[in-house]
Image 1: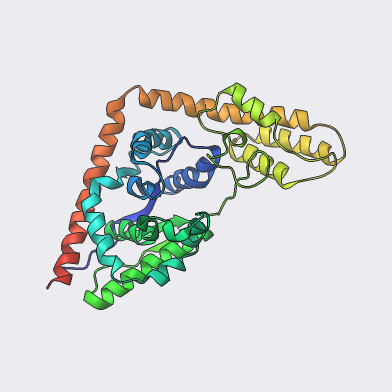
Image 2: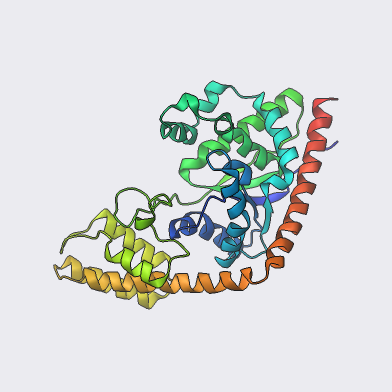
Length: 332
């Protein structure tokens, strides 16, 4: 059998673990939408197996189709971007994960920076479930089974791509040239702060996060309580709010309005109330567009099902073809 060439130019995943925040949009969705506009045809998977590392199955099931609706409402074009559910190829991905697990040691996995961070957040790392330890290998299997060429990642995720490349190299060396090496398509690493400015915006602190499902009143109340800065001063929290306002609006007039208010603030004027009003207006305008789009999508459940049926079929074809070559090479 011939070596499978790259089949997918851009490949990335979504974790279905709850309602999305504007930070999720800016960090995960907007880069894919931008790649679409540049002529790429991404393959996006809903990582429901990955989500099981630290979430209950019922929660993962609940949000699997929900997150697909969210991404389409935020700009993913199903005519350009293929979307599938990871568990649709669970058997193939599990088989490749098992095969790749033979090629890496526990010590090497424990040196993966993102895994070290996840384990640090566990009170007793030795009690973390084994699936969490295999997270980098499972990620490598997702990428290699689809023969993806480029993976959009921030700097903090580059180690996962290197693990994938190393596993591909080791498989090729041990059994024969099967895998082409994927490359990182580096995107800006965003750290969106909470409205209090004390750490990143997180679903686990809903009072300081802006959710895509928030009502206009909820947004206004949250932003009213947001940290800013004393007159004439700048702070990380205020910088974060300015960044959010400009990223959520493409209207240059709104950008200028924000700049004028901040200019007055830095001259010592008391204008943070005015800034918060402008910030709230921008957020609510963005959310209104999203919520209208999403309502149209969810009014026709068959629409999401048809998109996933098509995407799952493509993923199965990719996976079956890759595993046929993998097995033929290993057991020749």
